[in-house]
Image 1 (cartoon, one colour):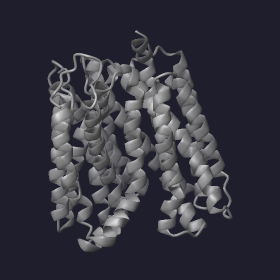
Image 2: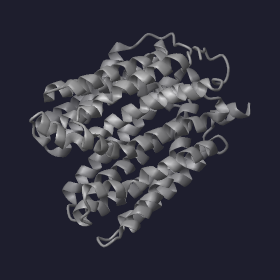
Image 3: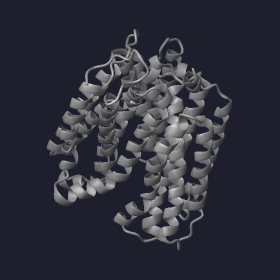
Length: 462
């Protein structure tokens, strides 16, 4: 299994399987560490002697680092190669995980988490692009469905894995376990990932700085306003972020291959798919934030039981993603995504109408509908985003795919906080009602894609 320069349509087997395994291992580590620390936060806070409020920086440091660096890392991947970017990302993530495990203070752990986020951005920004080069065009949907399966499975397994590790070891092992996984990922990736064509453009440092200011200050400002802490500082951060965003967009309009891929947004299928993704993930985050409060405060279930009751959602995503991935190689993303989001909206609507006397089974089958609809939508949508962009712009397309997910999740979390503040008596009903509306809008946007040219289908037919 040697390095392969793509001069044909995809990698041969078994190299393709090993290459996808390497990408999957990287995604598992990045996604798990984005969620696994949530479960252990109280334990970590007690260990490093900080308040629960202060310990939140452990979570935010990782998420903000990923958001700020996702697009710059995607651009670097196009310039220096997706394989190189992935390897550096995994290496940084592995070293940072060891740093997290060895931390004894909040400051040390937060800095290590920032470095972890840098590594995660490096590998996540090019994972979809690597899958695109590993798989033949006619099989791209099933390749991307593996990514969706890995993300959903890691998300679902995070609470259980965290609980299992904490039951037999200290919290440091939540991060130390990444070291052998990271080394294994590096060995497999070096031997099997494809060498991809390089872009001739130079890295735009000014755009990268503006991108960091836009998303970093914008998101921290939104979080500050939402939680009502340091309102003046949060307002200044938000204003500076908006100004940086305007300057960023103006700068990108004049560039041939912009860091913020505005050029790709001119492609109707790409633009509609990005918008659909934002609405779908905003709806998902609204549900994920509001449901645990309903299950624990209204239904009176324990934290462990809450995790079990919410498992049908990611479990059905895992089951539906491979099926929809194969279907997306034969049917338009607009049709599959529209059907999936319609089912998703029905599940959210049925969940919004729940009473305080609902049984566990009654909650589970409604969440299963949500997961099945979301799983049917996700793989075809990812295929449309990556497949509608030119191959030379796969890094930018993959960066925008990640940004759409993170933007939607941030929007959903912000809306959930506003709902909690304005409707404390029936917050779950209102939050899921809004989520249902967002899914309906996403359905409409997805169906509009049936009128947009689909270069992936044209390439497959050719």
